[in-house]
Every structure is written in C-alpha cells, then in structure tokens.
View 1 (cartoon, rainbow, N blue to C red):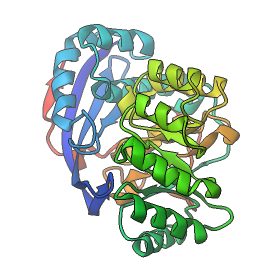
View 2 (cartoon, helix red, strand yellow):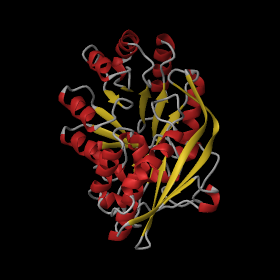
View 3 (cartoon, helix red, strand yellow):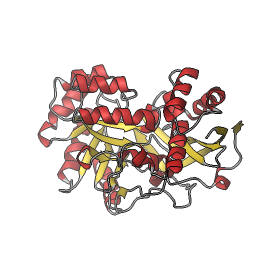
View 4 (cartoon, rainbow, N blue to C red):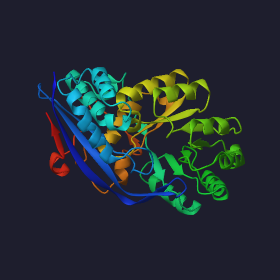
Length: 368
C-alpha cells in the first residue's frame, strides 16, 4: 500500500459563544481548522484534522499546518501509511519540530492502518477498554455565580467532569474555587485550569489558600521550571498541560515528580504516534491522564477518545468534546458524540468517522 495523494481543506469553525481563558486575558470566537485526506493505491482513505486553539494561545496556528504539509508532502508520497513509524520519521527529517502540523497526517495514517487491519484505532494503539470516557466541560472565566450556572448547564447534559478556567486575580480565584467546591456534587471532578496565567507568587497564594479542599490545579505556571518551584511549596495536586509537548517533557515530569496528572493534547504533541509514547511513560510512573484535542470537530474529538479509551479506567480522568462548542458539524452526527456526558469509540475500523467533503468546500491544496 502506498500514499498516492494528500488533499487539504481549510474551514473556519465558529464557536457558539465567545470563549475566555487565562484569567480572561485571551478571547476566542472562531477556530481555523485544517482537514487532510490521504488516499492510497489500495483504495483506502484516511482522515486527519489539525485545529490549534486560535493563534494567541500557543505557538501554533492554522496557516502553519498548511504550509508545513506543503513542505512535507514530497517526503510522504509513496510511503506505506500503515508503517506509521516510517511516515513519522520522514516528517521529522523533512521538517524538524512543528509537531502540531504533523498531527493530522499521523492521524490519517492511523485511520488507514486501522481500516486495513479491520480494527478500531484504540485497538491499534494497544487495546480498547470497553468503558466510555467522561467528557470534561470547559468553563470559561467569569464570576463565581456565572461559572456555576455554566456547570449546571453541562450537568443537564450528563457531564460529571469540569475544566474550570481561573487565573484572573488571586482573591477572585480563591473565591471562585471555594464557591464551586461548595456546590460540587459528590460524583463530580473539577479541574482548575490556570492556563499559565499565574506568577509563582500568585500560584502559591491561591493553591495554599485552597489546599484544604484537595483540588487539582492545571498549569499553574508558565514553564516546567515554574511548576517545579510551585510544586515544592504547595500540596495541591498539579496537572501539566501546555508544557507537555514532547516525550522528553513527560520524562522530566515523571523524574522530578513535577505533577500527579498530565493532559495529553494530541494535536500539540504531534498525533497518536507520539501521544501513545507519552501515555505509556505516564502509566509507567502511575501518573493519571486526561486526553484531549486542542480544538476541532468530531474528528479531533474521536481521535482523542480512541487514545483515551486505550488507557485503564483508573488512570483515565477524562477527555473533551470541542464539537459541543461549535456552531457547525461537518460529519452529520457520525463519530464519537456526547452520550450522558461520555465519549465512546466502538468497533468500527480506523478512526470511525469521516467528514462530508461537500461541507468542507473546495480543497486548498492537492499533492500527488
């Protein structure tokens, strides 16, 4: 089997309402998503999606994906997509770094490999556990009362895990956390996500002020050095998100006991091939995991659900469903969808979902 064609589409994905994070510092209204279809001489096609969360959140942006694909396409054409390691190495040699831009190609290759083997992607990645993965809501920064109202709206849809954005100022963040914890249901899990907005001093003030609640705080500092310093002076469990980009980052987190939880963002780390190595290293050190897309449609959510469902339940804390925040749907209700607050992948070979090309419009590039 050989790759004969790469077709690329671009689509703007409007959010249903403006979204604020990093203490209200960043606002997002539309996501720029790139879709890739890899065709083969055996007639099997695979789909990938790359969707950074805007261009001000992290060093990643939609046009960068499409420019990188143009650079990498000559090195990918003619390869066997089932040999995902060979494709991964070809991309890394042709364009060092730029992991987020390689993720949709890696995703499409795993889709093809699963279809060719007659197995869902989760089984190809090590084995699918039957229980579905709880979806973490994404609660935008607001007043404590408005954030609780937002959580209530997700509860009505079956959600029992919530990712709450904090980081505005220390006094208000302490108030937010205490208010939400006072109204948290017994079976709920709340992750307080700072998105790097705190300084070391601010992190210590807030985390020590709420340490009695046993809450988990995500990305309380800008760098791993910051989080390591915060870790030494606080007792709250910590999750690392934006500073988990590579396997080397995961090795440091485990080696230096920087965090008890990691959030594996599949697009940011480079796709399923690299995400599964990070997963395995986290599991080897007893570190629990969230697995999420950085943004995107049901394609990106389904990819994350496959990787999440390859993790034992006791280490799998949740995933995300960005599709629920969009005003468009390009797959006509197919793929992993919210069922009582959970995403589930079935026995459909490969990714198990493909977009309707008519809804994507005209391709922006074709390489063959």
